[in-house]
Image 1 (cartoon, rainbow, N blue to C red):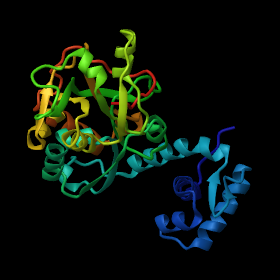
Image 2 (tube, one colour; image 1 turned 30 degrees about the vertical axis):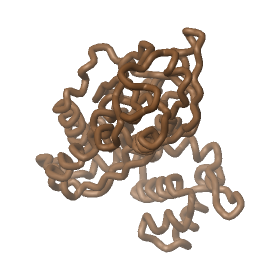
Image 3 (cartoon, rainbow, N blue to C red; image 1 turned 60 degrees about the vertical axis):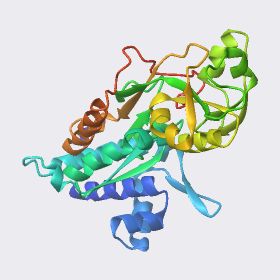
Length: 322
């Protein structure tokens, strides 16, 4: 039986979206500009209509039921579609963009092309706010749920509906302090495996692509320090005798001021590509498309895909490892 949508359904949908996103009656009320009792009453009606509690108490907070978790991306998509229906379809102008977009990145993005990207967005859309959050293993789910609007990183297998586009490639080099006591002109494989290592591990897990390449040769390294940020790894390398295997773009940008010297890795390491990933709900969104185009323009100006066949994934064990 065909169900005709009532005018009140759109209001109920907006309330449900706020509740599912905020997982809090109080925060949902603040987001909607309504009183807490009004949203509490609306939640009671939604619970009756959907025959599910949706939000249940867990300690001092609330959690979503399985039904609510499944509805979350569906409702988010429905709200995005409704927004496009009522949007002014006049000539697009980025200067009129308002609101904020959330982008999932590591500090690689901010260090390598963050400033150029910021300048491009600021020049074209001064009213648009960007919120950068750290990459995570569940980036795909966060894109699906509408918690983030764009992700930039190294990804392996992704849900088939997500859109991807490579934006920049890089390769790995080694850095040590220029006055290192045992490494002068060349870093040998023997020395490389004997030295203590620093690794950029976004979630603190040592291991990854370099370790897999070494293991294929029957070798291993000791990761003495695993840190989540590229900048922190460079600082640690500059103040120790440890070796850091890191992206060449970051090394060439920041190694000289830190007194670090670059060396070719003594093992064959393939170049890699970072891609931007987004949900197809934004395919028809002019503002989101404009932002993606600015990102491509900025990275293209940097000779972004200089490596012809970069890997789209480094370590099978960690889709966001660097």
